[in-house]
Length: 308
Image (cartoon, rainbow, N blue to C red; front, side):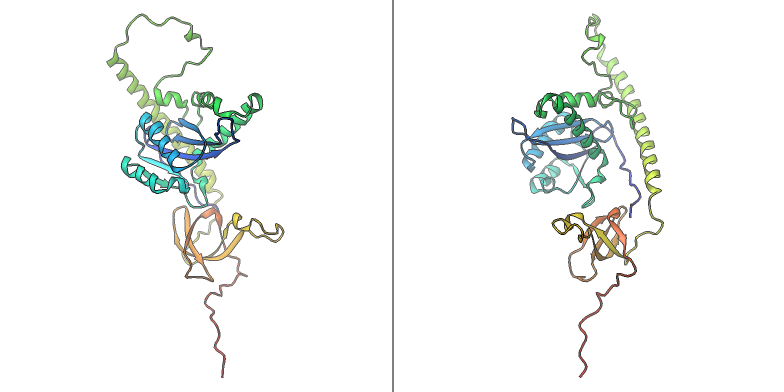
């Protein structure tokens, strides 16, 4: 069952930041991971090659490259990876005042912005690698510059403009060959004009993002089943990883039945019908289907006492 789309509201630049980790072929420099951070308003992306994906590496990048360059984000959105929920990371969140938001368990696609960025970045790297070899960590900054200066459909601007309030000068731009103006720029005037232009650009970006989210929600909600999942319903849960290693012809990735004990805006909490004392699990709605009628609930049946 596909749940209604829950658009994530955006604030100011680097108010909400998404983070994810992408694995790529090992380079001669020993890097095989990319730690990706994306700002929800401007769509500005930061991506760093790394030899590992430990909490120490992520914490160092968060502090040195995000906080020290862009300020402390109010919220950090990611999946439930242990390297992002470790004691070290919790200390970083507490010390900096960052609110950590986790995507639904077994459904990292909730963070669609970072997922889309990963797909785009992976495609760019693959295309470039076919021409220049597999040392993607050497040309990653150039690919990021190309993305940051590209027009973004959802914001109607480039990430570069939304962050800096001006268009980037690129190699080949005729303005590079022109002499700089001999006149000094008044700092106060520049600051005032910059704030006005940025405020207008951010307002336009928020409006454009909101319109895009509404359009996506409208399309997604068309696919939502009319009958909702309620507390007490028996459901089957899609768990493809649990079926791995079994005979493919016999493997059934839907497990259950489970009993719904709590309903959330975009997911449910369930527990096994036949093992009601087992721990509950929380899953996204699109991994849940109502049980067919032929799957009878027999959890209440105990051992029958023999008649004497």
